[in-house]
Amino acid sequence: MTTWFTAADCDLSEFRAVCEQKTELGDYPHAIDVVDNVLIYPGTLANDREVQAELVRAFLDGPGVAVFAGAFDAEVVDGATGVFNDLIAAQRASGTVGGDHFAKPGANDRVWGALDKFALRDPATFAGYYDNDTLALVCEAWLGTGYQVTSQVNVVNPGGTAQVAHRDYHLGFMSQKQALRYPAHIHALSPMLTLQGAVAHVDMPIETGPTLYLPYSQRYRPGYIAFHRPEFTAYFDEHRVQLPLAKGDAAFFNPALFHGAGTNKTNSVRRMANLLQVSSAFGRAMETVDRPAMLRALYPVLRHFGGNVENVIAASAEGYAFPTNLDKHQPIGGLAPRTQAAVVREALEAGWDQERFERALTEAID
Image (cartoon, rainbow, N blue to C red; front, side, top):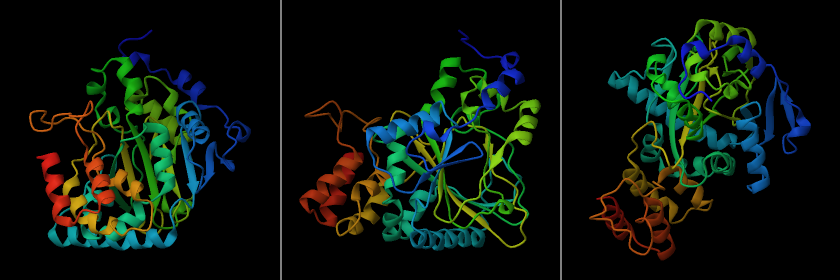
């Protein structure tokens, strides 16, 4: 078994054999279609072990990508789009430009740290948006409970060119030289720590440049080295697939899948997607998020919220107790101190007022 990958381990013929498979609809009983080897699911599915197991199999050994049709209500998406446009306008007014990892500067409008900015600007709209059962289902299936949501809004403007094919966070954000420093078992671990997703905020016909995917490419073990090599990029360009999305559709995929945003060939459509990068409780998220500030803003909404409060808590509160200062936060009564999420739940169940909630939250994080 290989312990350390080298550039010599990247064999294009082996990569072709991995990628040139066919997705059979009959192998995925909860899917409703297969388009260009990509699984299509309905926007609502039962959150049970049977469905979760199928999704894990799809992301791990199957095509590595699935689209959930109509996962987000169009009106809810429109409300969030208004907030995102306000954030972009504020960025432009301040002279701030959001760069992109894998595209030319200026091609996109990017809002980094959009999760907490969204919650602080409009907590009611945030709660309605992240009260989403499909998001919770997919995140729990791949990552288990206690997952951490981060969000980056990306708008590819008319004429914006395609991204270079890549894998994603963690090892996907490293140079080839950096990635080679990690042993092979860490290459296998990296995609288990995160889940990638994108919510379409406008209709995305092919000419607008929705994401390009290479199904099954997540199964290629030295892929975090290979995506830097030109022959693999060329193979991606020749064999990638691209699916149109309707507003409210959500795509989720294994972060090891070779992918990249497409070229926006229109002269009028600003292709907006909310990019979701969700991390396991056992890892750390890509961005720092001011979760206490979010929770202070969200708490009045959650006290009278008519939807699923747990979905909103999962998207906004820290669900993992460590790292922490154990002198201040001793794990009395259990193996770990209370999390932010536990404080929110306790406050809501007991009907605390804002002042008492904020005091308890400060005590839990100070």
